[in-house]
Each structure stands twice: as C-alpha cells, then as structure tokens.
Length: 227
Ligand code: ADE
Image (cartoon, rainbow, N blue to C red; front, side, top):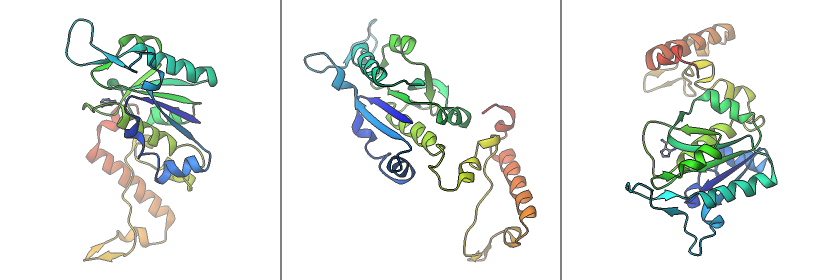
C-alpha cells in the first residue's frame, strides 16, 4: 500500500512516521508513505497556494490549481482507492472505517489549512472526508498522521503478533480488557488472581467479561452504534 499525503506544511509530518510501528512497516516494505508539499505544484510565480475567500469572510482559502494538479500527477502514476480530505466537518473516524481502508489500495490524504480549501476540490476530487474529533486543529496534518498510523498497524505483517490488532479496543465494538505484567504484586497492588491461574478457558471468559463491563461503564454508546 502507498499513502500520499498532500500538505501545505509537510514539516509537520516529519516525525510521526519515523519511529515505532510505522517506521518498521516502511522498512519491511509493507507501506510507502510519501509526503508532498502542495506548493511544489503551484504555477503561480510566487508559488502562492491560497487566496482570499469570495464573499469576503475572514481567513485564506487553499486554491484549486496546486491541489488539482498534485492529485492528477499522482493519479497518472498509479491508481488510488480514495482521495481523503481531513476536516473537522467530515465523518467521524471510527475503527470500522480504518479496518476498511487498511484493505484498500493506495490512498491520497489531503490536509486542509488556513480557513479551508476551495469547496470545488471537495465536490469534484475528494471521495471521502474524515474528522478525528469535534475540535479544530491548525490543519489536517496531525489528523492525517492519526489516520495513517491507525491504518498501517492493521496491514498484515506490520504487527508481529497477528492477534494483537484484532484484540484492540473498538474491534467488535468493545473496549479492550485491562492488561498486567510483572511484578505480580507492587506496593500491595495485586494482579487479579485469575490471570495467574493458568486456566486459559477461565482467563478468556474473564477477559471477555471485563471487556463488556468496561464498555458498559465507559462507553455504553458503543453497544448502540455501528463502528
Ligand atoms: N483539520 C482540522 N481539524 C480537524 C479535525 N478535528 N479532524 C480532521 N481534520 C482536521
């Protein structure tokens, strides 16, 4: 899978993909992540990529030309399953959509900045729009990093223990059960006895109960909604 990220501030994306699981996925050749500066496609002599909004409201708007040319250039080289725009008014990102995207082909992620992007890009070039939460970031870059991280860890072979990604919180609409490690007792705080019993059937039942209880207590809405 290849993920191309179009940004007006590509420097913001230098860190998130150069460590940990995403770094290893890149090194193993399981994903290619390419960050592009939208400015590189501007045909303006000053490499301008934004302009004042029609109608006179405040803030600057990213113009169509550099973004349309960037998308066209990428599409001329390979096919893309989706062109995704990160925006606070997009569909709220959930595990179900991430699962789906991790099984698709190549993706283009478009990051907004300033007051937004020309609406015609959204209407004619973008195929899906996601928000990572009901708050406004300075741009879509951190949201694109969140989406990329969530997708990449699901690509087969990225996480060593295949089970691990499937037992994450939100898979099956349940929060994950609690986990413990050594020492079995610290400061009088004990690991639940059942986890040290060696009875795997009983342990699995307990873990399932915990997942249901935690979901009921912390996120009862997950029982009501689709992911
Ligand atoms: N860009 C700015 N805020 C955002 C958010 N909450 N989600 C996705 N993209 C954004």
